[in-house]
Image (cartoon, rainbow, N blue to C red):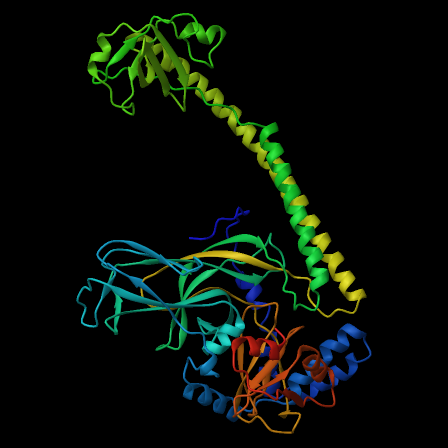
Length: 568
């Protein structure tokens, strides 16, 4: 696997609480109140608020937009019927949808690890993992086909819905990346055998507001028959670090400076942590005495001067005089006749733990053994009593060291995140002063591991709080072409999700947040787009909520062209 960089790993923290979720249900409650006849009082209240200040004026405008074009029960029913008739997975531009990459599993009877040419993704497959459509075990060679979907443009081209219905509450999922996989033998589909699990490891990128506070990711399986994402439990996601900004980013120069500043902050923190490890070394545990093993040969050495272990001195050196040494089971093979030789010199060198290297020599002959100091009888019991007391003291000292160490580490981490936040705010201020309309957020690299028990489309994702929706009127392009009963796509470049909405019907409701953009596909496969500034301006006008999209002249013929058209 080609993922060899050194990174600061942090595991996903707590998920969003139910209280956070409930805080975002106000628009639905407001719409319900309006439909039951509270419309006039709402408008009167809005007019009163128009004089209360800019913050309340903005809230009043949002309220006006919601109440302005009420959704009738008939329109809502029509929308429900529309979605029920649509394929759950429907690529809008099939010719641009990402193709599958083949990998060959030459022998399914033994465990195998296969991976993409760049090591991303990687599949760890157990033995006998597949069966045919009749439930019979599959042997021999199997072809694995996969595709990796990274961002909302990939999701759009694949026709993936990112709405999750949990206990009757619809939530939008933000994906950290998806992997779709299927398998064939001789051109016929095969399936995963019961009880078998494939581990999938892959890396992805997305934007996060802070590397010190990122969401808990879950593993989801797309059940297209049931038309829903199925939560399969917590995922295993590690944060690897920030990535360089794209040169096409409007704020590239500022973000590149921020990227370099954050890299310097991380390097300084890493150096501080390394210096801390040197300055505050952990207590060393005492060595546990070993009782001699009657099944292993022992040696009593009469050391010549200088033959004691090279690291021993003073009282420690005296300890080795007359010590019983037992040949370790880990020692290299030796000739039993060696014990009949009178060796002229012996030298000990301590290795790890209780292992020592014993070098014996006599003329041109030499012997290398691994030995351990051992005790017998009452000497062993006395040594164990001393060891227990020493170990209790070691544990007390270690707890004190660990408490001090964690406190120092936390202080360094806190300073690191504080410096990063200061750098981000400075970047935002500089971009605002230069009139650059771009977020200061950097993309981060994530590493995921998920275990799957069936083939298909899998994602690591987390549910988002509800996005407020606003009502829109007529939706056209600059040529006044109406987009009636068509699917539009709404994204916020800072969130890796994709909203699908029905436009040109009786219930045009658009999820709106700062930076959102909207696009639709014309009947002839062209892209009509409403960019963030135009979308925000349209909904800031109390007198009109007509949306006019910009129809692009050329059909996108590649994914790269589509991204350029969308300016992503």
